[in-house]
Image (cartoon, rainbow, N blue to C red; front, side, top):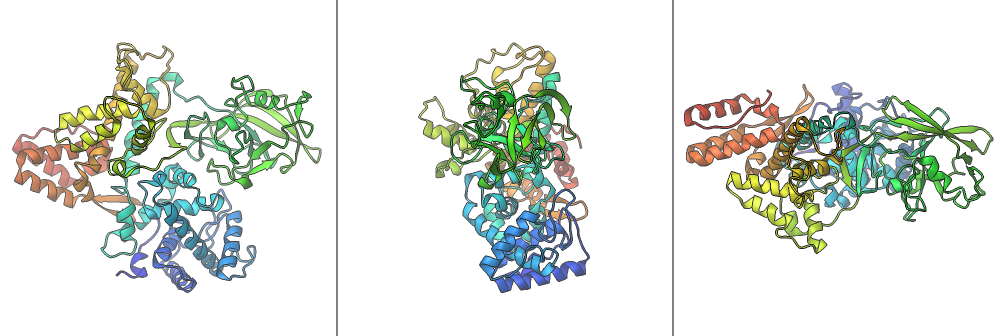
Length: 629
């Protein structure tokens, strides 16, 4: 069996932040292994801790984040450090002072070891949760490293972190990838059992999904931006209201449709006005913020945040204060970790944050901040010390295509054995959709599960093409739509598929029926989306062995994952030599799915290209390989 030194024998993390000399790195690793072994950590835990240390700080005990208080080997923020020190003292007999030990490398190693063990244990408890399907154990643990402090194992927070753009900056799978290549590595088994079918799957999907989404939005012309949502944000620290941009923001269900979308958000030092209307202790969606999604007593939605607040002015004196019935129910949600998931310590009363009253008068505004979020109204509040502060209503940017469902079902074994597809927009992941259909009691001529089973069994390409279209219609609830109901330029079912998966209705300056130019773009978008989904299904069924034969290595020079196609090429050659017709079909479908994933770098492979050219010339093989290379 490989030793811990085999596992950590890697050069540097993908982030490269704060990387130190080889001598310093080896010294830090040696100290960590020694201390963590003494503390009773397993080799799996030690390996995870070392990899996390490399990704977070490059083994630099003085590494300082540019925009947060994150510091040291584990990049603990100030608050997280205090919690972790407390945990170490209580569970490992430590006697550290959080302030005095902050700059001590030995203390950082000890505290990081304690928290590593805690995170790994939490990871084991949630690894089989359907919301984390497709992520390796190491990825889940890394997501838990970031989300476990504020949420103590909140699975939604972990998924949001892994799915969000923040994860692209610290890809622990890339850092671990070299440790998976040799047989017997301690973590290798965990990767094999828990990883998705290919290492760079997420980035490949984004590579085709994003251009497809751009085709859809381009077809809308000037109306392409999704409707923004406008919660009220409070300037808590007096330095002006600050927000995050949509790519660095949170996932939150603004419109209460069951899907949390990626959104611009209030910065961690400010807060949003909220009310836990259903009494479950959390802020579930935009209906529990004060904004344009607030339901008024008459059943309509508020025009803006200040109208929503005005309904809580029980004595009608133009302000919200202790004389109003709802004063203690109105909360300020300070989302310290920025994950879009409220915790008890993040929901503070108005009194807790020093607010004496909120003035309900407001002034229109059109100021767009540096993060792309627009202040539409501005108002004020009075503090308990007599000074005033600012409340702003903000139209926050949203990305309605990248979403996470709020509720997840346990998937039955017969469905779990079938291929899965990631859901986008207002569409559940494929297995979740099949599970929901199974318990809905709704009768239909053919179920989504049956269509997926037929696709998995079909050996004829034309049959699979037809089934793919049926699956898309059924999956998105578009199968019953009249094909001619959106004009003569496009099949209305295909347009509905795009609308559901992109989370945005098609409404251009010409109405809801696309003109010829828009329809051309929409058809291209549908084709790209369909090919992406087809590729995923094929990679999990008919081409599973070929995709399983791809090996991945971390390229330190380019800081990226590289695919080794040697075994795939050998298998394709064997098939072509054994059965020419079957081999041609297999090669054609594999090339098609590689393109469907947007993996141009694989198509550039010299050997793969030569293989295709040879068989096109010598065996009259026809494959459509038009693509940018």
